[in-house]
Image (cartoon, rainbow, N blue to C red; front, side, top):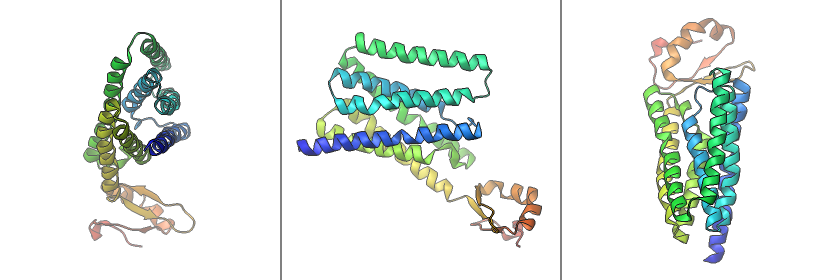
Length: 255
């Protein structure tokens, strides 16, 4: 059993590191598109709080997998928020003020956790921060259902959170760390719900396959009439075949 737990520690830490790739990818997308309209700011603010709490708690109880797996997260999530705020349409002065507040709270919280809060209290803060981080995507799920647009849920981030929650949930059961069990149990189901909702609404999308070397693109079924009306000429000129699922045939102009 000790050898298996050690393997699980390494595996869970590795999965956690892999989960940080998704925010990094999102940051690169923001660099490229300058679009921050669908950035889940609240999720990543709670993610920073969560990582900082676990770093302090892991050091206090001398648990290397816990603090080693969260140190990169604390840094990367802070970088991600910085990039997102940099390209946010707020006035420059407001963006700078928000970043100063974020960095100040970040450093102050770590200092307080290390020097003024016991491991027991810090463990409870870990639970609260972790639960809030995992529950925040419920708002994204609601937006997907309301708008029929699954882009409000990032599939890779949701999948990474799911794998991360599952691995640490297993580890918490075997090591009897209740502070870790509660949030990862909740996180497993919320992350799974995100993946399911993303897939459900992804199946409702219409795929337009372009021929003659023109790359394809994806759009929502609800936008099909607008696309046909605005791009009818392009469809004829570029010899585009339209694949559809459940739209009336009268609404689609065949080649």
